[in-house]
Image 1 (cartoon, helix red, strand yellow):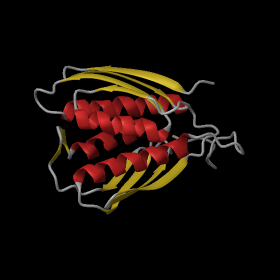
Image 2 (spheres, one colour):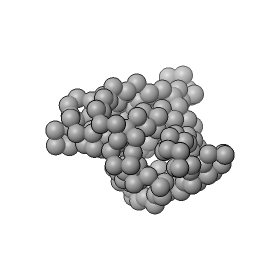
Image 3 (cartoon, one colour):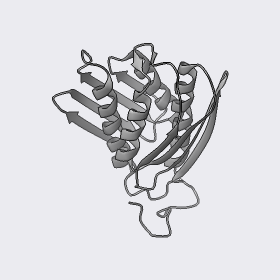
Length: 196
């Protein structure tokens, strides 16, 4: 069974198409108009081994907020659709990602109950053309719409670029583990018999 999905989302602020293949090779085709965010989405694909295509035409003349948040919504919905009833997945994933002086820990549960618990202070207001406040907005939107409970915590770091990159890498590796098929279990990974 293919674990793929495509989501289209069009509002007065953004026009977005997102496609995912959970059983991919980590390939990405990303065009958001925000260079640093494109870089982060490419990292997310590469380290999760999820093929991710994102096309966004957003109101960047205002700022990047609507584009980043709406991409998070669309990507979350695509992941939720592709993972289906979650039968046979590991469900949980965690990873600690270091990069130079920075280190970030992520732990996730694809429980069907979305929520983000993030402690990721970044002192720089901007990294390139990217507003660093939008890191949380992206992960909130993604987690709520994918039904992922996620904890993302800064262990060490001072460089904003490094901290954010560690967050995306640690989330990606955690997601890779959680959506992977468990060869020992083809059942719903819950004693309740369903994950919602």
